[in-house]
Length: 319
Image 1 (cartoon, rainbow, N blue to C red):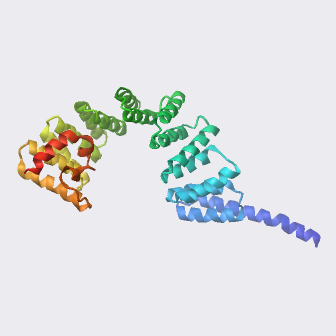
Image 2 (cartoon, rainbow, N blue to C red; image 1 turned 120 degrees about the vertical axis):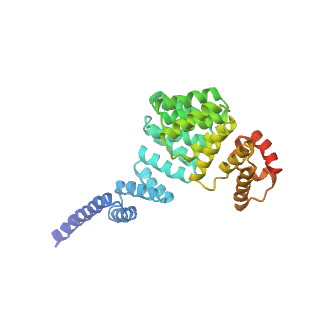
Image 3 (cartoon, rainbow, N blue to C red; image 1 turned 60 degrees about the horizontal axis):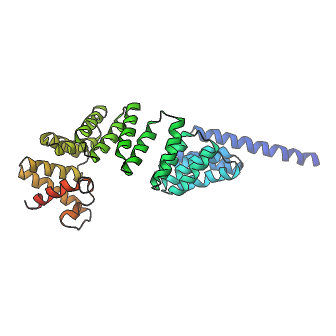
């Protein structure tokens, strides 16, 4: 009788672990994330020390938007056996919840464990940026780029930091390095937006034209190129680009305002009134009860081209 009970004690754990491993393999094979979570939950109920089950369940939860649930699972791993990937992934989940301070600490811990974890360094820089810690952002990016000079996103983010610090010369240098390293629609677009912001209209136009050669489905690039055409006095080209932008978003009030101002320059008053009133209608429909130029305070034109827009809107209001 005594030997019988000993046999049970030995066999039952083996059967449990075997079942847990079977469920674990099944979970990793399924494409259904909800099913994967359910299977991994069963694994954990059979073997609560199986950290891989927590890890993959956290990833599935994160992919389904359950960031809080993912954080709980990653925390279980970190308490038991901390590793860089779990800190990094928990940081991403916290970042998705806009807990930038919590994300920053997790990214720091990931980098402490693995100083050459480039994605963690970049994410740490992003968290610093979102916390308006520009000095910290530059320090992290300098570290990253010293270890991995070919990292275009790092130059783009550093360019954005320098832009916020109004160091436009260094910002342009970094945006351009990103373009040279990765001549993609994204890098040209980022540099184009920057060039437009510092009134380099012709160069910005060239960048947006390159974006559209690489990706003709970028509606924002049509709007921005239309803006450069308007500011350069190329009114017919501006009309074409703003109209194309509206094909991507028929409620784009910024494009409508661009068309209103462009048609006014072309002395086409019917279309001027048409698009100006359309833009006002959309803004007022969204609950904006302001009047005059304050109605447009959340538009691109008010925020980024105020003096040009202010002079034009006065004339549009008199029509």
